[in-house]
Amino acid sequence: MKREKSEALFEKAKTYFPGGVNSPVRAFRSVGGTPLFIQKGKGAHIWDADGNEFIDYCGSWGPLILGHANPKVVDAIKKTVENGSSFGAPTALENELAELILANNKYIEKLRFVSSGTEAVMSAIRLARGYTKRNKILKFEGCYHGHSDSLLVKAGSGLVTFGNTSSAGVPEGVVNDTIVVSLNNEEAVKQAFAEFKDQIACVIIEPVPANNGLLLQRKEYLQFLRDICTENKTLLIFDEVINGFRIGFDGAAGYYKIQPDIITYGKIIGGGLPVGMYGASAEIMGHISPEGGVYQAGTLSGNPVAMAAGIAQLTECLKPNFYQDLEKKTSFLIDSIFKNLSTPIANFKIFQIGSIFWIAFTDKEFVRSAEEIDGDSMKYFRILHKELLERGVYLGPSGYEVGFVCEAHTMDDLERTAKAFAEALAVAMK
Ligand SMILES: *Cc1c(COP(=O)(O)O)cnc(C)c1O
Image 1 (cartoon, rainbow, N blue to C red):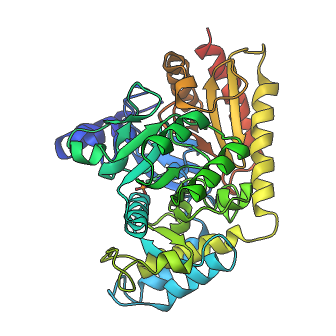
Image 2: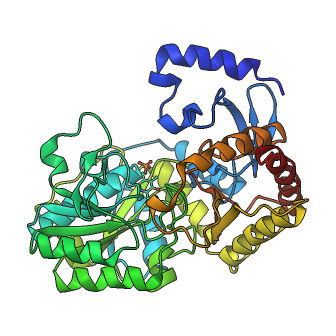
Image 3: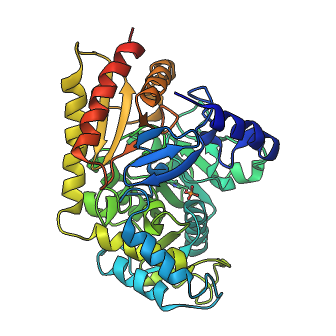
């Protein structure tokens, strides 16, 4: 496989950007080698600068549920941008996307559009603090919520800890308001509520944690969080930036039938353009400016071109059986991978929910917390990733990341992928 053009572009990029990239995981550090510079995408396929073609399971890290350059999304973008790209004044398209969402999601009544998942979560945290007049937040080790200061905090060594910053530049004062506990551990949450009685503004969780492996939680655990938040007048935030519109149109709240107090969305909602949102009851959202005292704003919020892309994509997601078909395809892919193996591999698993899958080298039946992931097993993923690239299959370049099946994957794509996996795994497990 030729890599010369990508390699030359990466050399140049390193002179412009830290690590040669504009978002760290793209640098291929955890799998080694040079990132592929992508030239174009169509359906489930992408082509790099050297003309190599791949079946793509990264899907821009989740947003592209219809695949690349879906004609309806492309048309909507073109038609809209011809009439101007931003006004800093309201447009009907914002109403249209909001109606589409609210008519099909009974877990929120009002919403605010922003421009990224990070911004959505950061704003939701401020709203929770403003609403409860409390400062502390509780998060879980193994959940990612974007890169705002109060959330770049990882667990320390105790059961209930103020975390350590997971980034330089995050002030200690901020860290001291973030409590970090393990997933799937009710005791730790109870202890945190006992220790910080009447101080916790919100509990924030990815109800389908999918940024550090796929750490599927038990419904009873999510219900436990709902109940303990209610008892303590603490808001429960579901960060559904990755699983929203992915495991169903109404995301994890609809899947588990649990009513959180605030929900954040991103990724799929923008049809491949930068959109995020947060939503809640009308009463809670009434605390956002200009109605209430919690300030939050954005020059490009509700951007018409991005709204049009979101409307086009979400309209497709509402077609009958859209999510069932995606789930079936994903199960077919996973079954085919196992069927194609020449010998069974005891410590090779693929976890799935809807069209999200995660490849794990573990003999555990369930992996529900970050501590249960064996970092050493990533050595297998590194080889698998490289061997799959050689065979025309593109996974996100980290064993901690999940893969996505999109509407555009064909049966032929899935069968070819399964064959490639069998060969690549044989090399990885040697
Ligand atoms: C991707 C993601 C974010 C951050 O969204 P950006 O658009 O990258 O800022 C936040 N939370 C979750 C759960 C995510 O998956």
